[in-house]
Image 1: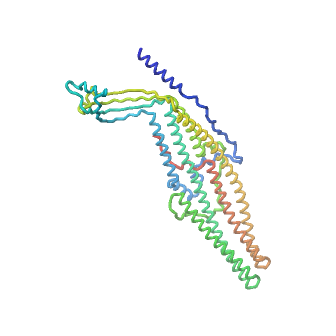
Image 2: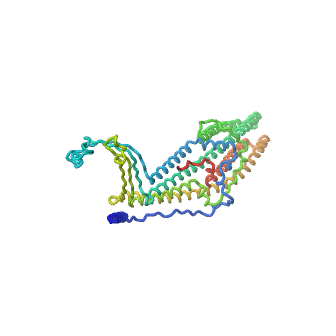
Image 3: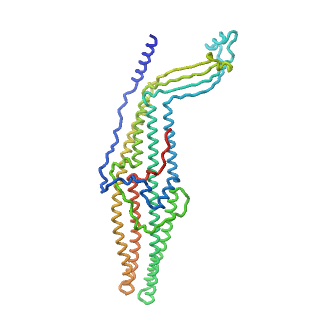
Length: 487
């Protein structure tokens, strides 16, 4: 009967503790809006280009080699890799919290109780063995096992482990997003380097052409058909372009060094072939549908995983208001003399206890943690929606840009052709005294500018294709080996 009463009393106490959980204000945030427009507002069919690995998307062997090296040596990526390992250790730590703890140990102590204490009075009036009093002071030795276990009845510890696991996968997606940005930056810088090489070559050709024009003007001056003013104007144009040549050479050095930094090595020359740059065609781009962004973009996937983890954090914080059940046990040997320490069964000791504990007073810290978890969950919802919105806007902008730049390249090519023909016409007219030197000078200047602008527009077109690939979520597939496994 006593056992039944004891069990009933425990049940009453447990229910009373549960009843002490406060009626918290409902601050549950709304669910994230995952709706996206049906299209990007651009004609696009077929599978999204993001499903291609970067090795399939980029075909230039020099560019492929640079990216391949960067994925191994880039410092930022290696820092992100360590973040993944750190997140993995957090999962291991959390998973160990809801498992029983078992330890083994030895201990020794000496105690001298006062004579007029209850323990001292007991030792004074009793003996350990017949005719043998308690040692003074009294030593004590212990050897055995101790175990403790918090029973996860409200899933607080398991939810904390799940949240840590989600953040681990979010860190993997964070590294994937960094990889897409790195690959896009390398490709963009590489195309910039090729465009600078072409601009330098065009400038050298125009300098040679202008020097020939300068000699022609000098001959015309000797025949008194032009004045010294024409000669000086042509000389000034040659000097200006020669000065511009050194500026482009400096830009080439800086672009090479920026590429080397991204690749993770010291400055060095990058072997490349810049011929045919203007004739390069952007890789074919399948657009897919906007909902593909939710699966293809690592930043969107990372935001979604963080959102799921934030929801679990709310459950973890709420569980702190409920009673916790812990079980403690020990088994070993305990004796006042080392010779008798392992005497069986006289020196064997064991203990088994269970405790139920719930917060009753001054729960402000727990309430603050709960409300903070709710606010962070709402923050994660907004962050997810913001990430999706940014992803859609980036993809739509880049798709529109690549269409407009394709048309622009076509028109600038025609402009270069027309101005190139006009150089020969103006020179012929000048030698036949049917045009003055200013028309020749202006025509050659316009032709040079049009060639430079064509190269710049081509670079923008190729860069836009890279940006579309990145905006659609391409670049992270096959970029890395499998992430570290959770043990």
